[in-house]
Image 1 (spheres, helix red, strand yellow):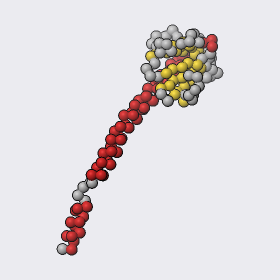
Image 2 (cartoon, helix red, strand yellow):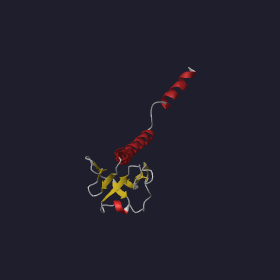
Image 3 (cartoon, rainbow, N blue to C red):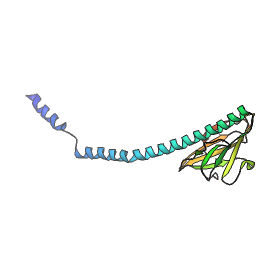
Image 4 (cartoon, helix red, strand yellow):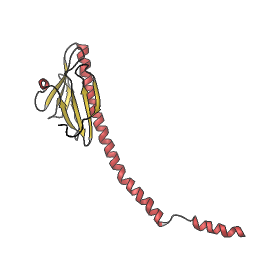
Length: 164
């Protein structure tokens, strides 16, 4: 019967969790439940910004391809007042999502007004160059066009205080 004393001591120690242990676990779960929506919101905002940059880059690349294949100048246009962009003379302007701030860097000659501007592509593949700058909160992306090659890239945006 020597083993029966040890068995009952073990049963008392294994009965369950203490109130403090349960409170610690519940506190951790409440903290995580509060952080998850914030993380999901931030992820959603990042994907909206990335999706917009990808659509702008695709439109710029389409304008360049049309210039190369048609043998004439094509132009990407951005209208910051109406928050839309597209290819000049082509139907189907793309709207810019709310919450995303947009800036356009282009040559002085391609600035149509304070709110509208062009990035032109030539039949040899070159362009006037420029960038479309996107910002949502602290996230920034630039869709850049190289003037010499007409190459379009998406890159991290410039730092705060850059005049955007």
